[in-house]
Structures are given as C-alpha cells and as structure tokens.
Amino acid sequence: MKKTERHLSSRDRRILEFIARYRIGTVELLAAHCFNSTSLENVTRVIRRLERRGLLRTVAAGSGYAYQTVTCQTLELLGLDPRAPRPLTEQTLPAKLAVASYCVHHKTELLTSQEFQDLYPELWRVGMRSSSYVLVEQEEKLRLQMLIVDRGGAIHRICARIRRLIAQRKSLPKFLSLMESQRFQIVILVGTSEQQGKIDRRIKSRPFKLVTVSTFLLPQLAELLLVRRK
Image (cartoon, rainbow, N blue to C red; front, side, top):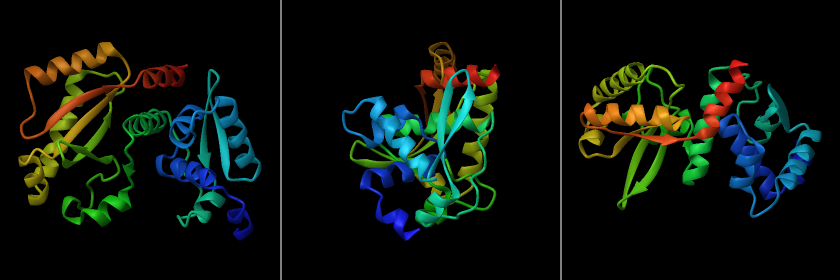
C-alpha cells in the first residue's frame, strides 16, 4: 500500500477523495472538479490508469452511461473503512449524481455523515439523517443547506417529505435556533424545468414556515432517471 500511495499525484488523490466522498464520479464531474482546462479524453486516460492500479472501477449503467466508484484498496489508502462499497441502486444512483453535480457547480463540499456529527453534535441524534448537508456562505454568514433529490413524482409527496424533515429537526433546540436565524435552507434538486416550475409555484403559494426552500435544475438528473427506466 505504501508503494501505491508513493506514486499518487496530488490530483490522483483528489480524484479518489472526491469519488469516495460522493460514492460516484463521472468524466465530466472529475474534469470540472479536479482538472484545469483539459480535454475529456485526458480525464479518461487518468481514470483508466487508476483503474489499472486497482483504485477505481467503472460501472456501466445502460444506454452508454458509465460512472466510477472506488475500491476497497482505495478506501484503505485514504484511511477509511476498507469494506467493499455498497453498490449504487436505481434509487441511489440518481441521488448521488445529483448531489455531486450540485456541489461541483457551487464549489462546495458535501459533509459526510461522520463529519456532520463531529462538527455539530447538537444538530443530530440517532435516527436522523445526517448525510445530505453542505455549508454555504451567503451575505457573510455561514448557512447550512440540506439537499433533497426529486425524482419527478407528485408535488404533494415531496412537500410532505419536507414538512416531516423540518418537524423532526425543530424538536432539537439548536436546530430550531438555526431555523429562526434563517441559517438553515432546503434545496430541492430537480431534473426538468417543468417539474421545477410546479414545485416553485407550490412553494410560493404555500411557503414553509421558518425554512427557505428553493429548487435547483440539474438536466443530467432527468437523463439518468430515463436511463434507469430502460
């Protein structure tokens, strides 16, 4: 393992850390996050080199779509739990892609569940999801955003889900204080402008108390949902 690590460039390590954090990588995401003005062909060559060394694995998802995951060897190298990563499913694949794409676009970083629990133990308890948060700076204030992925279903379902998430977190005094100071936000990641419009109109007509809820359009999410249905 020491020999493997010795021959890793800083960019190689950044690629591996990115995919380990988000559980998914694509040529486009890695080009935007880890490379400076290079061709997709060059990114692919680097991925293939890391694959030959047993550090990455490419998975075909159908209709020509493919993505990268890390191996046990990579997790061990990064000092993480070296157990085999859970395979992405029809449900988790679009969600992981959407979250990674949002973070790359906004130049922010997803907090792992452990990072969030260590940083903010007062904002977490057993049974409460803690793996969908990012920190953003707005108006010179650090704010906590929770990312939710919409899969194109009925609008009332995702709104009901948001109400449950808010109610669950309001029961924690520190989280309620965060809401009252307008430093907690929910962002819904959507795949089509049509769905985004429906959600935006619903939020405008019936806003959520204490929490600002907004949408962010990711066309690649719709494309992946379509691939998974084939």
